[in-house]
Length: 362
Image (cartoon, rainbow, N blue to C red):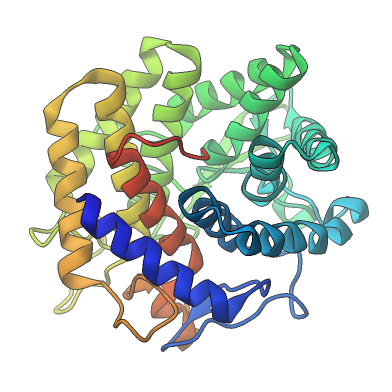
């Protein structure tokens, strides 16, 4: 797998020389679109920066670091505006500012990352013990499974400031996920809604098939996020929950190793796949293997990576690494179906870093 990892880094490096400091999101064919001037606050706008930081680590090419820092500065308009910051502050500033600070000791980046952590911390609802997902009255009381990954920013902030308050909030949010998001069979809800008193009042299907299904990428967020929380806390309840989700994925994963866009959607003639869910799930399985030494997790991670290699690798002249991503089960936008997604590419590289026992960003 070392040679394969090297080939992926080489291909991503060639793409970066073309993309430079643009901000990619979706590629319906060979080229990524640039989000810089269309939606600078979009939640995916840090993942290419994360790829650039991996390329910098692997190649020591200063151009990659320079472009990543340019993207970080582009996001200042979002951070300074505050009102557009939501629960995805973790995604947006872990892969820009935290990486920059860790890899170059840039104190301005540290300041940005701590400000983002404070904004994420401030979204915590004490009554319901959750982080408010989005802004606006329409989303009042909504929490989503994706937030499990954003908690990494809070864990980092507690270690950096030697202040346990961030970690305490992260653990409370993770406990809410155990209580309200994970079914006994290991399937995962996308959106849980709470009333003004903090009581659960319902669920929504969100980007999955319906409210009782198990959206593929959301299931992956749960697997990887719960495993990260176990790594940070060493609390067995989080390992047990991760194991439950892992068992669900193992049971429902297609034989070719690439997850469905929703594991419990009807068995259509040609079921939708989501390569990004596969890449994220592989990260979760590899981290579980590192923490438990259970070869079953290593084998599952390998099965998914082999499935992605066989089924989803993009042609050599494409900018993306992976094909066959899916943004949401019911999306009406053709460009969001069977496409390449920048976060799929990022987590594909992160999975390979985990497999090769290298330091990773989440």
